[in-house]
Amino acid sequence: MSLKNNKVAVIGAGITGLTTAYELQKKGIKADIFERRSEPGGAVRSFKNGEWHYEYGPNTLLLKDKKVENFLYDLGLKKEIREANPDARKRFIVKDGNLVPLESSPVKFFTTPLLSAKAKLRLFAEPFVGRSNDDRQSVADFFEKRFGRELLDYAINPFVAGIYAGRPENLSAKYAFPALKELEEENGSVIAGALSRAFRNRKSEDKVKRRLISFKDGLTQLPEQIIKKLDNEIISEEVLVIRREITGWHIETESGKNGPYEKVILTVPLYKWTRDLVPANEQQLNRIKEVDHPPLSIIQLGFEKESIEHPLDGFGFLIPEVENRKILGGLFTSTLFENRAPENHHLLTIFTGGGRQPELAELQGDEMLNLVMDELKELLGVKADPVFKDHIYWPDSIPQYGLKHKELLDIFDEIEENNPGIYLAGNFRGGISVPDCIKNSIDLGKKLADELQQQA
Ligand SMILES: Cc1cc2nc3c(=O)[nH]c(=O)nc-3n(C[C@H](O)[C@H](O)[C@H](O)COP(=O)(O)OP(=O)(O)OC[C@H]3O[C@@H](n4cnc5c(N)ncnc54)[C@H](O)[C@@H]3O)c2cc1C
Image 1 (cartoon, rainbow, N blue to C red):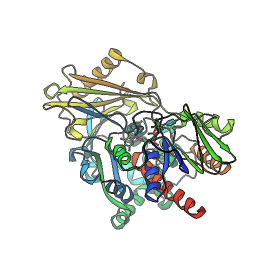
Image 2 (spheres, rainbow, N blue to C red):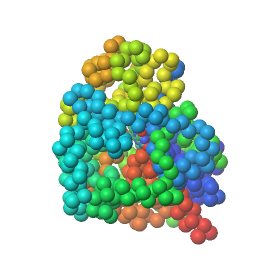
Image 3 (tube, rainbow, N blue to C red):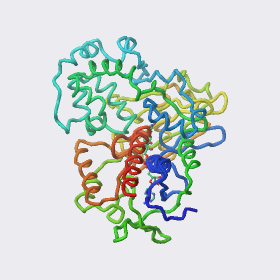
Image 4 (cartoon, rainbow, N blue to C red):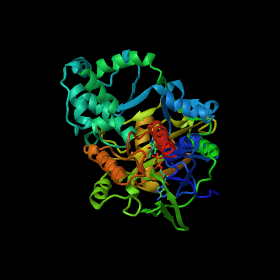
């Protein structure tokens, strides 16, 4: 058991809290880590059900930064990494009810039947489209202006559903896709900027070859390994109150009061913020409560191989909103990684709901199963009932970086400035992906360690 007498407290043992605590420990600073759930890891968690093996939240990590790769290697996870099947480079998009491959190679992209000749030609006009300085420009507006409506409908809309469970109309281009917006700002063109960046990245020491990965036993190995490396045990208690007193910050849980702490890192999701937990004023909290986290259902379905006509030779499929279907798309999970299904079986991971059709995420039991099966029969040629099923429900999935995201970032800054010692970190700030959370937490851990060491 932790002695609960450290100078730093971390609230929440998701990937953000764990990575920050681990970075601090590397600098000789131990933190008390509080987690309300008995299984740490937050959204990152894997399930084993007989020979069926699947994820609770994220399914893959896109490794492209040296910093994140070094972090995984430093944890001793190098040998545990499993790269996605090369077939995963192929992603299918549904068009007119058929799965059309969208290949990542630019040459193959120009031969895809997904976009009309007119839409492909439109891409050549992109460098001549003027840049927008509007902080509140939506992802939809950004892509429609630069690349045309067809690309927005058949490429961007489904990808936004796949990454954010959201809709491009509701997301900020600048904050949801900062790299693309930067290319526009720096080069006046996304395409020209991407080409020049690809050339520079080849020489950049910060970047590594892009790899889509998981671990031998699933993503859960990441939080588990960090926990193994931490000297302190996690305190399995929900933090109810964080309050400043003369001696420092104090933390109250059901079992009592802890502290004083010099620094408290709060990694609790925004929808759980309360007046007791965050030293914010009512107006700030009301604004934070407006952030949308669309509900999402994840349906895991196992089939005998012979009961699916489609070869499932790719990452999975995404469905554009204009196709008017009842699911968002799915992953070919047993194609992506080995050992996810028993021999001669396939595991599919299907998503419903999100910002597009939030009401469908709420369906339960046979109603949900029938809805999904009707779609899979038409799209993948599924001919028999599943031999395995599970349903994971996310009432609040991913924070949407909405059109007023900048206001929110200003509020986080204000709270920190008005409350020295409080740090707000998590997927609501600086990127929602697991690698983004890791990168931001490494930086935060280093910054806090420097501050503490300067004070000493
Ligand atoms: C369905 C889904 C699919 C995703 N897919 C991908 C993907 O494929 N690839 C990818 O890179 N990213 C993906 N993401 C995003 C990524 O998984 C998350 O953004 C990231 O894991 C968030 O980590 P976090 O530590 O910031 O927050 P969380 O994981 O939410 O951790 C916060 C922790 O705080 C704890 N907590 C809350 N309140 C209290 C309290 N009062 N006291 C103590 N503890 C508390 C919670 O129990 C939780 O453990 C996905 C997310 C979801 C939801």
